Image 1 (cartoon, one colour):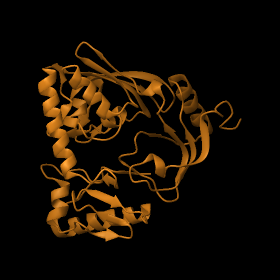
Image 2: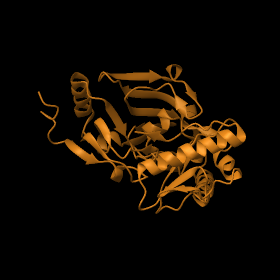
Image 3: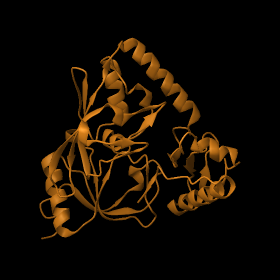
Image 4: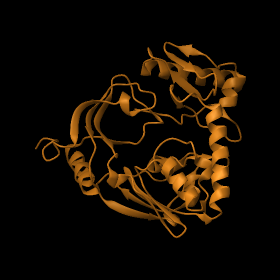
Length: 292
């Protein structure tokens, strides 16, 4: 049985991945699928398991760098409405894993639910934010997580309660293939005041980051108690470039991909920056960016 048998409407071969990531770089996926329902996703994951085909989940691609040679196996993008819903039940925000984090934040704020407003402007999906425990200004997404519904690598749907969830700086114990849904227990507050706080965070974040039309990505985790961007800036590495990749002049923890850039340029620049910081300051910068 071929992999596509029964999935002809959702599986494509050699799908260019550059268009699906913020860097807009890299080669194609061997197989690429956009399932329409949880049932279709589950069946596809089980088929890939049977065929021994590695499977990756792609959200908004804001923290992904695809290598120039592309990605073997199956890449699944959860773009259908079935994976993007957001709702509110009392003081609980219910968000599907494929929903945009920004939409989840604004929905909570408009309904008078506090806790997520500091995360405004962080790109990506709810699933990615929970898996990587996205955070800003001392708050993190995982702090509010009450429950997560996941799809395992074996194609089984499981519910993880709060006492089964563990979060650290930009990490969690959610190693399952897909986060289908999360429930966040938030705090009631005045919607007008929440909106004002959210707007202030938005302005500050956008003023310090690369311009919206630039192909860019945040690269390193912040070392404990320090700012990766400030460390790179203090080392005089703003503007450093290799090929078409350059350390952003606006925020040194971002790399800009100019029109002639390749993924290998970005990888080489990352290695250069890490080596310079290690040699000069004795600090080992860890990647926040995922390289496929």
